Structures are given as structure tokens and as C-alpha cells.
Image 1 (tube, rainbow, N blue to C red):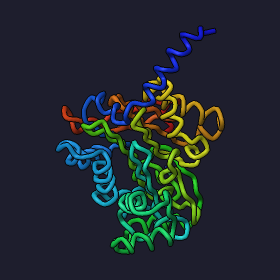
Image 2: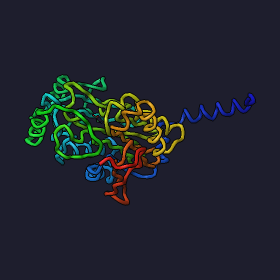
Image 3: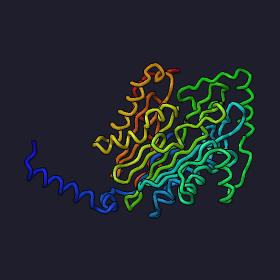
Image 4: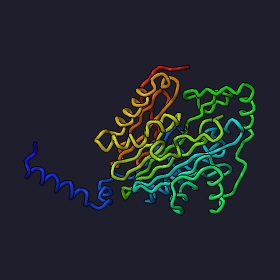
Length: 333
Ligand code: GLY
């Protein structure tokens, strides 16, 4: 039992810590850095670094990086080249979050090629966090976004080929192979940035699973599932089959584990173990990946299966691509 004196001392220390200005974390920042999921994270990080490297804010950096992923490449799982749902509609999900808790998201939005920027407008211009479907599109149009047909000829061809069997079977890490019914459909971009002021922000954007049911929303626009950021601790983001992240409030879990003193890699590993513990059989078939960065700029990742890579960019190196460790380490091919 602590003595009354010890108790009072620790209470005063705790009260003092609580009274510190939120900017206190800023003093401890180790330098600007941006990290993101998968190999396309390298150019996306570079787009973010164009902002961050000049002393720009973490929130502007993650928006710039995510925007690159949405239109600067043609990828079947993010933005304008995303594969459609089973009815042929390309529907996009995105979220953005600042380390002070401000956040915004859109889900199942159609015809808008930069859902991440609409998510930011939701954060900055509405009293809400998440707008969906027609309402999200209506809001985007009111903010000056143009409605376009996002379905590419390649996506259309893949969808028509898939319709012949209509078999839906997500597979692990078979990126960008346009095999109907067999496409990698969960390599979302999740990005976390730390700016030179020590502020953090994150962004997550995806077209979700190819051939998903109409109306299906994944983890990416769900704050706490696909993305969570807290300036006092750090941030986490996710890629993979979003239902697992939602079931486990996984990005929030990773941040809370870091709050308890776990390293980013260890926190990601624990969250992956939680996924396995809850659904051991399903976990053998699905890919789930976490990426985290704490407020001191330490980075870690962990995945269920082999194959997850993440990109790290700071003043010393702008094109690092690192393999993540995983629970299951054998090749499935
Ligand atoms: N992680 C993206 C999704 O499941 O939609």
C-alpha cells in the first residue's frame, strides 16, 4: 500500500502531467517522418514528403500522399482505378485524422476521385465525422468536386470476367493480378506522418474489396478500425480484410497498446494475435496488416501472413521499403 505522502506525491505528479499543454509532446519529436503501407507507399510517401520536408504540417502531408495514391497510379484497390462491387459500381472509402482527435471520413462514395480530400472537408466543414453514399457525394459536389465515371476499361473487363462465375474468394498478397474472383483486393494505402512540430496525422483510402456486396463498407473509413492517431501516443493504420479490423477496433487497439508502453512493432503483433485468437480458422485464409508509428518517430509493423511491406521516408532516406514480420511465415503459393 502506498503511504499517504507517496500517494499525494504521485497524484500531484499526475496532475502536473495532465496540466501540461498538449504541445508538450512536440518538444520531444525526433524529426519529420512519413510511413505508409505497401510498395506504392514509396511514391506516396514522396508526395507527402514534398510537404513535410519543407516544414509543412502532418495533415497536409498525408492528404497529399493519399491523393497521389488515389490518382497518381492506376491500382485496382485504391481510388480512380479501383475494382467495382459485384453490381459494377466503384465505391470508395477514406478517412483522415489529426493527432488532436479531429477526424473525417466518407464511405461508399461514388464518382469522386479524391475521397481523402472529401474526408478532410467533412472534418473541417461539418459537425460530423462520417458521410456515406449519396449524401457523401452530394456534400462533395457542394464543395466543388466533380462527379466522374471512375470505372476503367480494365476494371470493367475484370468485373465482366468475374461475373461468369461470381465466385468471391479473397486471396492473400496476390497484388494487381487481374484474375477474376481471385484478385488481391485489400491493399489499401494507410499513411501516418509526424511533422517537425511533433504533430501527427494519418490517412487511409481504398476502393475496398473487389466484387464486394453493394453497400459494404470496410475498415478504412472507420476511425479506430483502419486508422487512429493520438498526438500523445502515436498512430496506427491497417490494410487487409477490413472486417477483422472492425471486429477488433484494431488501430485504436494498437495505439492503446503503445500508450501502455509497447513498441509500435510489439503493439501491431499483439493486435494481430488478437485477430488470430478470435477467429483462428479464418485467420489462415485472410491477410491483415498493421503499421504504427509512435510520437518519437519509432516505426513498426506486423501482418498475419508473409508479403506485407511498408514504406518509410524521412530526411535521410525517401525510398525505404521494408518487409513486415508475420505470424504465418510459410509461402502459400
Ligand atoms: N482494408 C480495406 C477494406 O477491407 O476495405
